[in-house]
Length: 211
Image 1 (cartoon, helix red, strand yellow):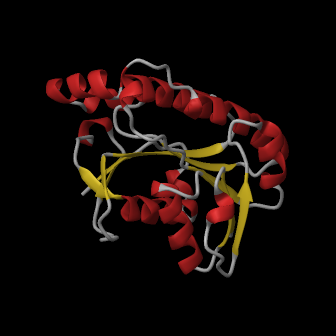
Image 2 (cartoon, rainbow, N blue to C red):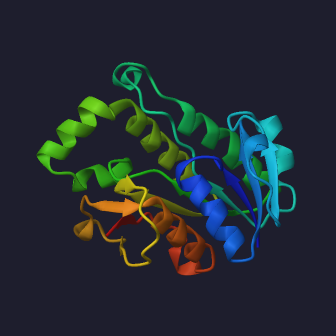
Image 3 (spheres, rainbow, N blue to C red):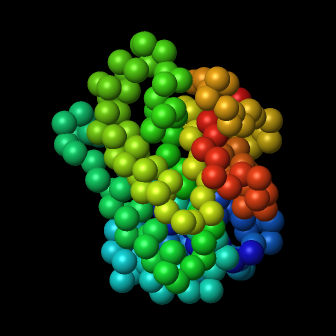
């Protein structure tokens, strides 16, 4: 496949790029600092703003699927400043995909977004409300935009992220009764994303991932 990875220079996005290239996919890597990515066979870096439809439009040309894996740098300002990156970028992307294609989207949010907040224990909810309230409010808005679309979407909700290597041994919890907090490496999240791109049974699902 030819994939567009948005948020390709850091975190899960960077892990998706690495794994996708290793599996023989072509990757168009979209990020503000994409020009700093080391060259590789099958890799096409594109620098741009993920909230700008005019920047996203040419990036969509000719790709088979999109992986939306944006992140923000953690800072104290998250405690009080409204976060809008996730929903704004999704609102820019989804109408373009619905109009121009492709129609396959995998988006990374996290446990605590949308209805998965119900899986958090009381102490976990307090932690989310104090440290991550604004980012996760926006990730919930992001999920609403995706679910209201006509795209063939999968929403991926990892638990606490680590820098560990891929284990390929992790739980994919699709049913709300199975959702729980845990830990998972960014490399394992990337593994799930690339497997899901080849598995239509994941369409319309929003699983929680944990070891």
